[in-house]
Length: 557
Image (tube, rainbow, N blue to C red; front, top):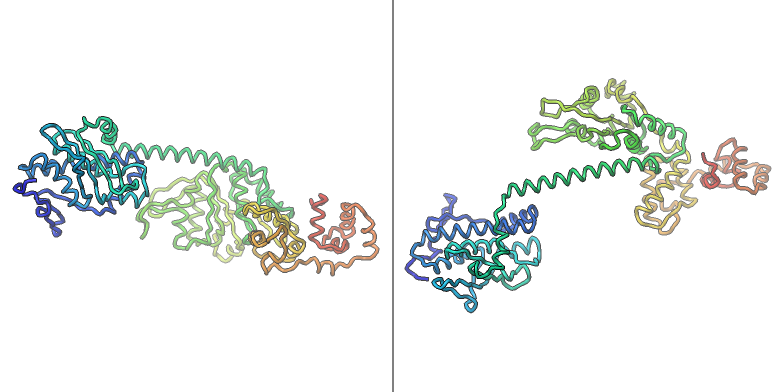
């Protein structure tokens, strides 16, 4: 390169930080971090896919190389074509993109004779480094921007269509990134392949196409989810679940009410202690209702801070309060077309209660910060462990809301009052958790039955489920003993029952003379007037053993 053309690029570079500009002579340049460009590259690959991202970055590089070539020719009009060809690689090195090293023995340039064959290396390619960081090793060359830049600059400098092809790449495991450059007519095969990447695409249209495709897939997924939900609801009619297990008359009466009211779109209030299965019964009502293809949205009102109750229930507009950077729908809108389960509704503030009453009466809600109302088509099922009658008298719960909610009232008995249901549920949970943990089938030992019988279960069904899950985890063998249950679950009351009901010797002999177990159990129950504790004492067995034997003989009902 001649010295008299004044091509010392370093000397021409001028920084003006106070003006926010960088100049190469009078040609403005911009500096970006390799990390930022790497992020853009990653976003393009993840959003558009590999092929589209490669094409976009090659076209980006081509535009930059072409612009640099034209700009450098204008700023250095005395430079020859060969010198112009050298300016591009020099500028690339100055910009920190890569160091271009030609391979002399593989390079032949004679523009007068129409020869422009260059082979060389891109040392320290930022693209190869970024790709390895973000995606790891590649099966193909990845210096897309470099290829595009070199193609654009060479074409501008030579005044004829030139192509650059990367043949080796550090991202593929090679020591350096190698390239070959020539007139397109001399590399027809490669030129044909490269043309595909330089075809211009309307990126907004492509993005819109992707968005539409995602929307279509989302619609298809929602249709499938609705279908699956519908099928699951149908199956729920024929398979036992935690909410239908139990023989206790009071529990069965509650379940019968739930079945009766399910098809009718009435408001339901479920009362019962914590852990008695209020949400399970609410789901049971939903699954048996005409709304079973819609959403079942459950919200625990006791977990909502008072200052956020309205926002969570009814939603809010953007800017409605500090932190509301976007608009947000509440649970009333989320349950539109389905069922909204308001658990522990007795813990809501009076203000929230008032808003819920209006929503029930008008079938419409208003987001915080909005003036317009929104129609909602939902069924409300509420539940609480609190005494709402007392709260109404104390003016802490709105009387009109209470009457509106309790159109149908379902009261669930505590587990301690459900007799043998605790054993049925325990056996069900043993099977459920054993299968869930992929463990061999387990069974409850006699001492475990006694412990379950003798404990009051203040946490009800939820506590029983947790206790059995723990026991399944801790039991090393196939039998669950009392030692595997939580320590607060004490020994059973069967021994106390036997002490209270000492058997008459004559009755004992009579029972022992009956060979058929079914007849023997039935006779003992007849003598004890149906009292299972006394019948067990007469037979010299525990109440739980009596229950298991009755179950085996088909005498439970």
